[in-house]
Length: 388
Image (cartoon, rainbow, N blue to C red):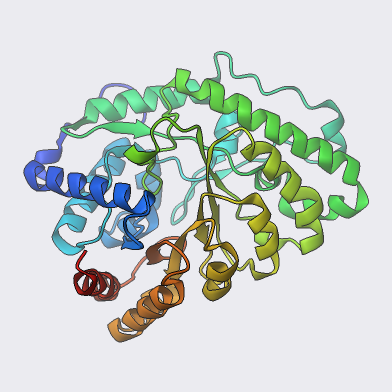
């Protein structure tokens, strides 16, 4: 597909999209605010999580073009930075242009088929079709790896297209149970927890070992070891720590029994390898809150449907929380609705938790700018009142 491999067809200069000086000031301010926040000098900050679905709709770009044409991908992200600088006075700004491959991380690591369709992000194929295949799983072999070599070539081409801003790439495998669901499928995996628990445990142990191995090797293919992408950015204040970012979006679909027996122990086994744990979980996981507490993540993205007040009460004393605003309110409500939701989220957390206030999960396509600005204004007004 045009733009993936071979000679670049065009050169995109960051300075043609935004003022480099203004951008540098914004990056510096963002770095300072996050440093103060993560070091306990600020009780909250605010930012908008603008991922590819939002940006593609904003700039009227077909997702298929975005994911299969590096020139389109780069231009959408450059326009996104310019749009943020002009419209959002929040505490975040992308530090680079990113090779955005969607969430098909297991498909890349295990060299599985990836499908591209109009109107959606890429979809990855499964690695196993029957739980009995777990008995003879080959170890993850990352030597001269086809899809990782292709990823490296895409990184190099993207760098030949973009000038004036870094180009980075990240591939970060999911948490063990969600990773197993990606390699198998969520329905059969959950049934196997009851029908064939021994093999499920074997698969989950394999996922932990594969995750750790992949983390040790991926840098050789030009992939950032820092988990950098368009919505995850490690901060300067965390330099020197062994760190991990994981998405565990399958977990909220499971019962407390499955979580306790099959998810919690393997998350704990994985996270024992790292000093700083950043956990992402979409959806509603009120029923799993006490188990997540046992993981003791350093930073937790709270699913929009999850009870924010409960998250503050159970996790707030040990974990930095991200979220607070339901995506549907931000998308379908009015500025006053969004301001009220932001005020409530900060009120509930005051004195109990440090909060990265944002629209949970990510900003839905079509979310009005006025609603995002209303959320940011609530945070700014509180900062001014507190003299921050």
